[in-house]
Amino acid sequence: MGCVGRKTLSFFLIFLPIYLHGALSQEVGPAVQRKPFFERLRRLEEQFRSFREVTITYLQAIASNYNLSFNIDARFQSLAQESQAMALVVNQSQAAMQGDLSHLKTWMKKTQRRSRKVDSRLLALSAALSERSQQHIRERKEQEAQREALSSLTLDVRALQDTLAHLMHVVQSQGARLAGLKGWLQVAGLGTADTAWPPAQPGPPSRSSPKLQGARQVLRALPEPRDPPQDFAGRLQGSREPPDPGSQRTQPPETPGEICNVDLALVFPNASTENVVFLSPGFPLGLRALSVCSWVRTASGHLGTLLSYATEENDNKLVLHGRDSLSPGSIHFVIGDPAFRELPLQLLLDGQWHHMCVIWTSILGRYWLHVDRRLVATGSHFREGYEISSGGSLVLGQEQDSIGGGFDSSEAFVGSIAGLAIWDRALVPREVSHLATGKELPPGAILTLANATSVGGFVRRVKCTCLDLCP
Image (cartoon, rainbow, N blue to C red):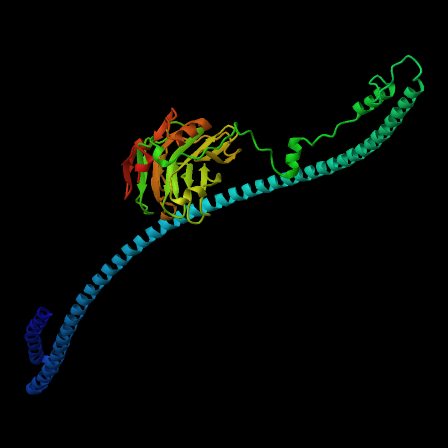
C-alpha cells in the first residue's frame, strides 16, 4: 500500500506543472488578457489548495485502507488456522465415525446371521413339535385301540367266567350222577351174593363203565382256564415284558483308572473365544455316515460346543454344541443347519469323566447317542439321504459363525476332552463298548487328536497314557 501512495504523489507532482503551464498559457492568450493576472493567480492558488485538500483526504483514505487491509490479512490468517484445526477435528471425527460404522456393520452382520439361525432353528423346532404332536396323536389312537381291546377282552373274560360257572354246574351234576351210579353198583353187588361171583368190594366203579367214560369225555371237552398272553398282559399294565437278561445286560462302566487308550487330552480352562483347536485336514471326502466318540469332563454348568464344522455354503454343517440359553445338559446335534436333534447329556454335568459316542447314518436318517456304553437316545428320519460335504473348517471348543471365526464365549466349551476320534461309518455297539472300556480303537478312524494342527489361547495339550492321569 505504501508503494501505491508514492506513485499517486508522483503523479500529482508531474500533473501540477503541466496544469500551471496550461493556466499560464491561457493567461497570455488573447481571449483572457482583459482579466488581471493576480486574480487569475489567486484563483489558481485556491484551486491548488482545494486540490491539496483533496489529495490529503485521498492519501488519508489510502492510509486508513492500508491499516484495514492489514487487519483483514491478520484475520484471514487466524481464520485459515482455525479452518485447518477444524478440518483436522473433522477428519478425526470422520475416522472415528468410520471405525464405529465398521464395528456396527460387523455387529449387524453377526446379528443378522444369528437371527437367521434362530429363525431356522425355530422353524425346525416347530416342525419337530408338529411331528411330536402327530406322534402323540398316534399314541393316543393306539391307547384308544388298546382300551377297546381291553374292553373286548373284559367281555371275553366275563363270557369265559359264565362258561366256567356253567361247566362247574355240569361237573356237579355229573358228580351227583356218579354218586348215584356208585350206590346203584353197590346195590347190584349185594343182590348177586348167592352166585359164584366173588363178593364185590366197595369202592369206585370200574373204568370201563359207560357212564364214567361219558363223564370223562365231557370233562375232556371242557376248555382249561388259561392266563392272558404275556405280550397282551404287558400292554394292559402299560409296560413291556423285560428282555432276556442275557440279551441286553447292562454293565457298570469301568473305573477311569482302567482306561488306558486315550493317548492325548485337551484342557479348555475358561470360556475365552481364543481357546480353540483346529483339526486338519478336516473331512477329505463327503460323509454319508459319521461316528464321533470321546471322553469328556465338563467344568461348567452347561456343555458348550464340543465340535463345529463350517463350509462356504453353511457355517453350521456339523455341530455338537450347547449354550447357557439351553436347558442344562442339553446339546444340539446339527447336520446342515437348520436341521438338528436335541440330545440329553445331563450325565456329563457331574464333573467326572464320561465316554460319549454320537453316531449318524444317512440311511433312513438313523442316529444313536451312547453314554458310558448305554444307549440314551436314538431316532430316525434325521437328514435322510444327506451328505456332509468336504473342504470345510473343523474346530473343537468353539462354534463357528464363519469359516474359522465368529466365536461366541457363551457357546465355548470349558473342561477336558480325551481320546477323541471320528469315523466315516457307523460304529456297532460292540465297538462302542470296546472304546468305553479301554480296549482297542476300531479301525478306519479318519481324524483323532493327533490331527490337532493349531491350539490357540490357553488350551493345553497333554499326553497321558491312562484316563486317571489326564487333567
